[in-house]
Structure formats: C-alpha cells, structure tokens
Length: 157
Image 1 (cartoon, helix red, strand yellow):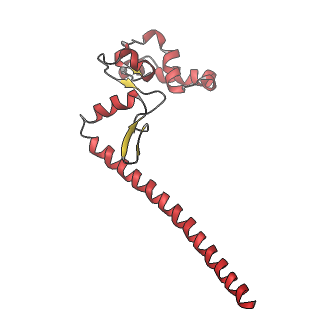
Image 2 (cartoon, rainbow, N blue to C red):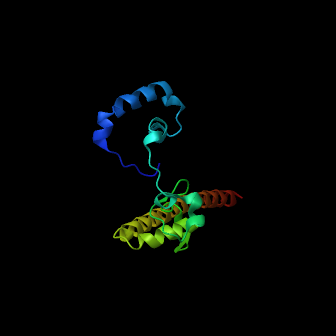
Image 3 (cartoon, rainbow, N blue to C red):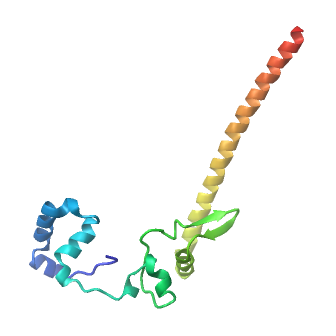
C-alpha cells in the first residue's frame, strides 16, 4: 500500500465501515496483510495508483536510483537496523542503507539516531564486559580452589 489518502466524508457516506466489517467477517482470515488487502480488494475500483517513485519498494531501488524517488518503501531490510558499528566504524550492509543515511543527514533527527546508536554500542560493550568478568571470576575461583587443594596434598606428603 505505501500510503493512503482518503475522502473521509465519502467513506462515511458510502458506508465504508459496514462494507469493510462484512468483508472481514467473511474473508478476514484469508488476508495476508489484513488492512492492506481489505482496502485493495474491497475498493479496488476506487484506487488511484501513483507512479512507482511515490512508493518505490526497496526491491526496485537499484532500478530507479538515482531518479527522483519521493518515498522509498523498505519492505524487508530496514536501514535503521542494517547499520551497525564494527570496531568503531559504521558499516552499511545495503545500498538502501547508505541512501537512507545520506537523507538522514539532511534532517534534524540525525543526532538522535547517532546518540541512540552510541548508547546501543555502549550497552553491547557492557554486556561483553559483564560476560568476561563472569568467566574471569569463575576461572579465578577454580584456580584458587585447585591451588588450595594442591597445597593440602603437598603438605600431607
């Protein structure tokens, strides 16, 4: 679907709610994406499709880039999840991610995004540190026990 613009007065006048509920009662369990399929199947005659650059799916990104994409619709991979840090360097796994990041830099939200990423990286480092501490502590405890046992054994002989 991408996005939806609706004439709400017309929807009410034409009984959209009643039609939609009836359709859901009879066919609702067959719908893969219920809200999308409902609108597409019940109102297909009234749908105005926009050109692909208004809703360019990430699958078609390479085909339409660098043309004038108005809205890029990320279906599978989300670039805000496809960007991570490896040894302090930002790694972009997909062309879409770099395109998304380039556009992010033009928004007032860029600082929030990178602050969030920094906090996530700190949390990951802390988890790794905690794991290391736990295993190191356990090793030290075993060394201590073995050392004490060996001291007792050699004292007896």
